[in-house]
Length: 459
Figure 1 (cartoon, helix red, strand yellow):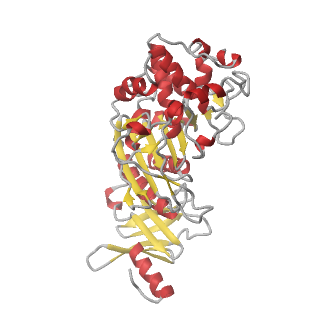
Figure 2: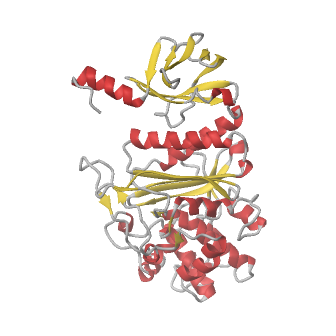
Figure 3: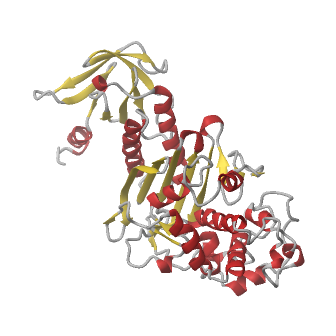
């Protein structure tokens, strides 16, 4: 493991738990893989706010459109086996499609460039207003002309990936769930992944949750509806570590994988830009990608009623991050970006020296929390309430074990002023002085606020 990675992982866990509390989210699970090894696996908050059940890493999540990356790998395995070609027309396998859809290729559907409807004439299945589509409903929607000609633009389509599930069934002679389990899930070695909720059994399962509006409070969304014909687009259930394991082996640089390096390069290549959005994303073959330079990423995200999830692989760093949340307003997207920001900062700054270990931890004032985070030659003063906690972070240069100086900070803060650790009679750090500001631990801050504003210092 890289020397900077262990302290980075420790801060990732601390920051994510603070973020969950700060934003009053029900739960969050995170896993990070270095190569094929899971180096962080953690869960925070609640699996079900009605029962108070604690969320653990063993809880399953509806990972929704992550399912598309499983389906994509299944298609590419069939291509590698010579049973299918990406330029095969889907009409070769499926009857009853509109002529323009019949002529679309498997590769066009797989890259979301076939121009197909996103969710058909009634997308109520994604609003908890009806069951997920049956095969007959799916084919009825696909008997209508597509919205655009093939290969004109990127146009995301759940119906398209449902169609690919039917293609897999036609080629293999097995149900989608049966074949994808045998040839993808099992061969990757995933023990906590199922193609649909009906296969999950009695394992612990996170419940979904609504936002706080318009009811003024969150309610539980059961999210136990089967995927039916949409399973290959949105049905999968998995734990956070299994999601990270799966995507890690899709990296073109992975040492072992169910796909050849050529297939992995094709799967993760940037094929179609999402030109009408400002996020700089591209779509490949069942993967989303973005980022620049050595921190370019590929992966996928998912939105199921009550769940928001996202996974990113950073091939040049040999790192995979998966963040799963169980709320319909879950912050998986900014939290994954925040985790990457933390890892990148540690990678660039380096591991902290042993003598800086006391210069760490979360310290409070009435203005909120601040984190002391040692890296290499400095201690950073991070803001855990930010999605990018090291943005404009002040830097402390240590001059003695308990004394330093703020050598870099915004001119509105306290550059050039002293920093000091203050200890109790047993030698433990009890507070921190940064310039003229005094910071204490959370319990002391709570007692101070209760005494001053509520009139009693009770826990």
